[in-house]
Image (cartoon, rainbow, N blue to C red):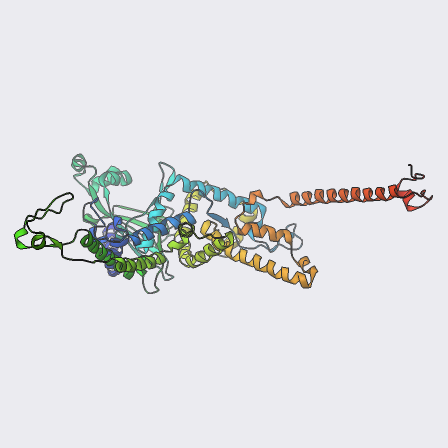
Length: 587
């Protein structure tokens, strides 16, 4: 967008782009409404935009398996990947430094930057700052809704804004119907248009009453009538193409931001910018030639529809079995009472007795079919992974710790293929945005001198030092535990077999390090481990005690021998030396 354009020209170009984005999204809307209807009906469909909120939903659902499975997957992913009760991420700097041989730091050459004590300490301080920012925000309240949209709709968006008055970050998860987005040539979402309703009071709070008075000439009377009256607005964010190196203001930032009131599309309500895109868009998985994501709900759609129809059929069959149709003679019309405790009087039981029209109805086949369908639906949503122990207890299956670790790791490996995109498209840009906001507010500490020098050196080469995020939540731990635990166990089994052939084979491995790695593979708390110095001191004390006990035991054995002999100790003999030069044995 050109800076020389007038506001009217900018507004027209933006609304034209919105019309194009609407056409791009339109083919997905019908199927997404179907998914919402049967998997996430409380979210309300796209076509329900102008329907009053709070209306009854889910009246077409006859089988709740998909809804329950989607909730379990959502809650499981939240608990396993991003929870306020556990540290679920660490910052790393994987780059390496090399020092000349004459440098006092030559011993650190070839090591990762985050292995340097001062750099590791700085990264830990940064983690504390962002951790506090997440806790001050509403992130943990919004993330379940964000993940639920990804699990059901397949595409989920989260807005990350800064509340300057309350000094905190605010996360918002808008409905899919509100958002229109586009990708860059690498498949990364870099454009997000949001069309939604906002009250007059909130518009004034954001853009001031002076600005709103120029848009609505009758604003005073409108506020008197209803300050909560909603107006539909468009908030467009996209990469700015006309950045000037001679301007430093909000209108020259890398991401452009424009606000337009939809019923006054020829005017720009507000213009500013962002250092980074304020929205995060995550697709559960995405086909290469599509822009919207697909989810387990899309994959299981056929089974979901089948299960819903089976549920409806079984419900009707159950009603017929319990309260089925009756057959009676014409003379009994209006004389049959079916209420509980009622009595129907007839003159002739053989000719006038009412009888059920359907007899010998059996439901086991229909119920068995539905059970199989429900099992397949749960498999689409990885329910067994999150309820493995609960299911084993229900079925009275005893699992050893090794079996449990192996089964969880196996399931986690399968699930990691899908959660990888959650990290790259959702959590990574969220961390980048939060880190940048905290840095601009001067809450991120200054990097150590060593790191500042590296940053300056790379900037001269046109490169940046990028902090990477290592996710260490329960799900990541299960995945890492599988690889490490299996490697250690296989190695020990190999060493055990080799020791029978070559006893010295154990000399090839560091037993202490194996123990530490093994404890780490089962998430043993690191702060419960002794340091190398403490370990060596304990071993030294144990060795001294063992040597002392051996000396005492040896002296006792010698004393017993001396007591049993009747000969005098010969001068200059070893016995005389042991007994300190004493003469004979006293009786």
